[in-house]
Length: 249
Image (cartoon, rainbow, N blue to C red; front, side, top):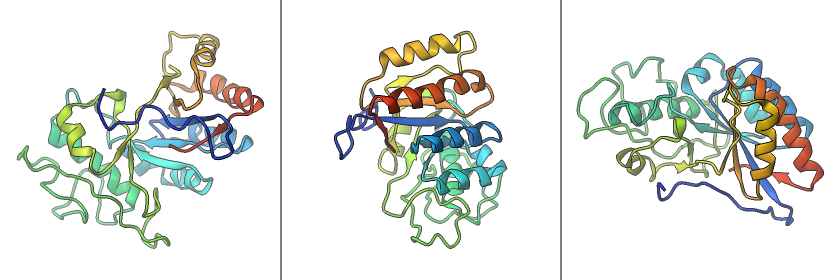
């Protein structure tokens, strides 16, 4: 499904220890994301945060704290819309908007492009009608010192990460994004967002299904808070005690 997308990662690290990859969607937000960072720090576990641009605008200091702790940020679109029911140009414009925030584009403003072309992007801006001219994000061009970037999400040598909200993509969207992004999906959904699933059962299901190389999805969101706060410390303790290490996708 979706050729070129990543669903799993290396099952072991350089030392040969089995490895898991923790990812968090939908932040950053107060309370939840800082709590996640504290749990990860206790086990020296790196993780990847797929950020919603609207939340980056509101809470850039939390994103910077994640980066300072050695974690990685990825693009989860600006407004968390589904690719299945959003026009392609609008969807890709939302990807570009979030990308600009992650890159720290000073010309970017909330709500669209104020009549100016964002450097490193092609096509028409938000609200323009030509479906054949969409915003295509280019790889970052940051220097190592990041002199103008409030949220320097990537060293200049790394290809940006993207994860579609709800895991929903269309072929035209995927073809547009694949040359410019690593499209990272997952192999294990913890269902921490599912309010009908008891946290204890979510943990049992996750532990039973997890294998080395799995990319796990959790959510640093208020909706997922109950299960997230039950699952994460127990997953970290369980797998650390069994000799696993945690890696960045």
